[in-house]
Length: 430
Image (tube, rainbow, N blue to C red):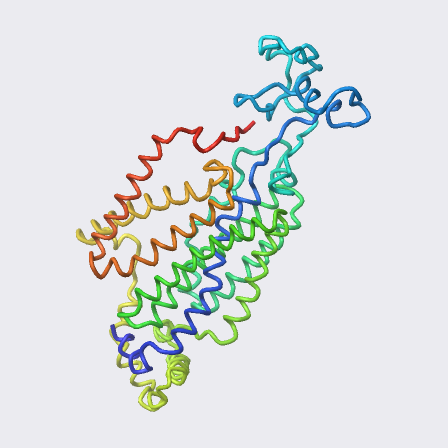
């Protein structure tokens, strides 16, 4: 709590904290676009096998319609739509008979797609599946690309090099890696660049939270973190609107990557380093400069005289000693009470991540209009985050968490009772 007292001397919460929040909202708002990008760029469009007679105009009979050619060339799939992964070896002319049934052809008369696929471009003009992925449409390429999003690299970077350099580096890494994906010539290169981007995204998630906590007084932290969380929700809604406007995956990728360069420049221009971290790593002179800068922005110019290096070192003596003590992950499990709380929170976090990202990363199987679904997910998420701070005041932390967990569990269980046909057919992988 020693640094909190120093922060109160520098003006507590004022203009600086407001500017800091708005500065960090931009990179935070861009995070959902990187986590959920593959909902749109890797969406699996409707597809069928390429057939010479059907897709080569020079071989198509002039007296037959496209629907008739499709009937004799592509067998019906499980949902009675044209099969996505098989075609007839030879045209089945008998199927043009009005009295023809499914028994008029057998599985032996079909073969896998030997010459590629024809994709439906009515929703997306291009996707990774149609342009970058291997020849066969992948069942769910977006999940394979995002498997590394939980990397703890952000915590290591900010602890070793500082909060501001960590945020700047992560923004640069995400901007370069995601811009590079627009020029990816194959699926492996695309996944490699997205893997590199994942490390940067992890840092952007964690570093703004740390900066806000360390530059905000205790009684205002809940509001600051809530605002940061609401920016994630707004980012989801913006992503849905952008994807609806930009139907080409490369254009969409550039649109959500370029703002990271702007965020990098804006953060480097004026965002101060954490004074608490500077004191802990043995840089009290630089920490004093940052505190005085904050005091001037907050209008407490008299604090520049009362804040000295000796005051900083004296106030932070115990905190520095505690921070420099060697700790390990095992310390969370050595104390019985701390072990119980750690295990409980691990379980809560695991259940939240699995259920939330399991739904929001697979929008294509939830309904036909994934753009509207993305916006609705963001709107519901915004409502939940915005009301959390108020619920803390009335119900407390544990009751609020338990209520939300119960509501989420009951909603997922109730969803099992909804018939699949209610939401339309599911795309079947080859």
